[in-house]
Length: 403
Image 1 (cartoon, rainbow, N blue to C red):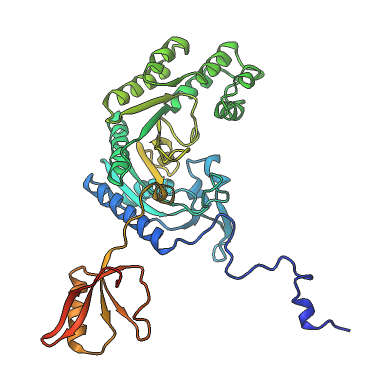
Image 2 (tube, rainbow, N blue to C red; image 1 turned 180 degrees about the horizontal axis):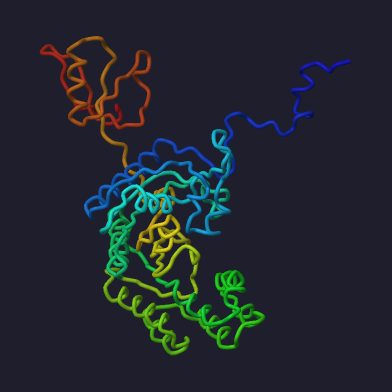
C-alpha cells in the first residue's frame, strides 16, 4: 500500500528540508540601511580614483578558469567555485578576485604601450569565508597601474589607498610592508629551495622557527636566514637589522632599498616592516603592503606589485595595485542618517505630477504615499510635504515626529 502524501511530506521522513528563504552559510542579503552605506562608499572611492586618472572597467563575474587562475597559482584555485559551461564543455569559474581580470583587460583588450590606470568594483565569490564572520560574497573595489616598473608606481598606489581610507572616514591607518624578493632570493641560492618552498611558506605564515630549523635537505645558511625572517618585524629600524643578519645577496639589498624609500616617502603616521608576512607570495613579485585600522583585527586592504600576472596572458607588463572589501569597511563607519525627502500624496492631478517630476530632476527625493498607507514610516526621513493650497501645490515643512 502506498503511504499517503502527507507521510512523504513529514519532517520525520525529510528532516533536512530547508525553508525556501534560507540562504547558504556565509551568504547574506544586504538590507537598505547597509546597502545605502556601501553604495555611498563605492561612489566615494570610484570618484576619488577618477581624480587620480584611473579608468573604470567592469569584467564579467564568470570566465574560463584558465583565465581567472593565470598568474595567481594556488592562491586562488581553492577559493574559486567551478562549473561546466554547457555550451563549450569547458570549466568555468566564478571570480574570486578581480585583479587577474583587470590584468587580462590591460594585456589583451586595451593593448596600450604606456602607463594605464584602471579601477573596478564588483562582487567576488569565495568557496570558504576568509574569516570567521566574513561573507563568501565580498564586494571588492580596487585600483591598478600598469606599464611602470619603477618604485613610483608602488608609491602611487600606496598613497591612493591611504587617500581612499581617509576619504571614507578612516584616517588612522597602520601600513605593514614586505617584499616578495627577500624570500625568493634566499630560496634561489639553495638547490633544495624549490623543493621545500610550500613547507617554507606554511612555516613562515605561522612564524614557526622550530619547524624552519628542522627542514630537511637545506643548507644551514638557508635555514638560519629563514629563521631570521620570523624576527624581522617592527619599525623602520628592521631594515637595518635585516641588512646585518640576512645573506648579502644583491636581490635582498635592492628589496630593502625599495622598502626604505617607501618608508621615507609615505605620508602615514605608522609604518611597520614584516619580512615574514608572505601572504600572496605566489601572486606578488615585489613590494607587498597591508593596511590595518582600529576596530578590525585583520587587514582592511592589501596590495603590492604583481608583474608576473600579465606575463601569464602573453604580454608582460609591470603592475601594482590594491584592493579592499566594502562589506568589511562599512561596519567601521557610523551609520549615515536617512536622507531628507519630500512626502507627496498619491494623486492623478497633473500639476502635482509636473511638480514631482521637476523636484526629482533637481535631485530631490519625493516619496508618494500610496492610498491607505499615509501613516507608515519610510526608509527616508520626510521633513517636507507637498500640500494643496489655494494657489496650487506647495512644499511645506513637516513638524518633527510627522515624517
